[in-house]
Length: 159
Image 1 (spheres, rainbow, N blue to C red):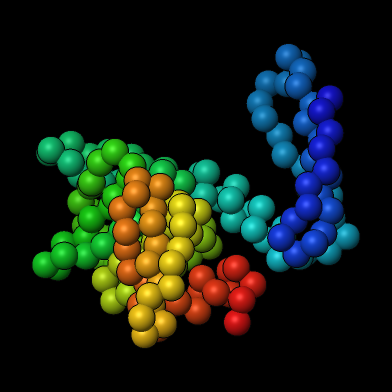
Image 2 (image 1 turned 180 degrees about the vertical axis):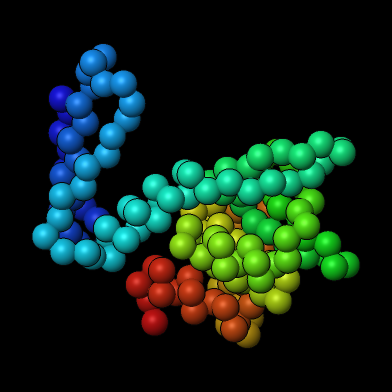
């Protein structure tokens, strides 16, 4: 058994126990907590993201994509595209449909035609007029409009 204490962003200590035993047929996660906290909600959102799938089309083939692999989604000329680190896929879903289904997985609207996976942001930089330039894990730079910059500030605990 492995044990580790982590300090959550809210300052709460989180104890993690991992039992490795060949007698287990499948992985099982048990969470013990006195209350439903913001930190616990974040853990649950991360677990849901592991199970959330989307489909995208590339070169005439339909691919099943894990939400956790998606960097961002944008719309160009009334077509919606899903961007991962290695490829771009087209989807028939509309941006608002994707925003609704991915909102519990740390995806957020960053502009009129773009949704970003917060967990795939590598760095942030303030820009003029309250906008934020985000650099994604693939080093692509995206603009978060002033209207949507509050999400990032709230996520980082800034006002």
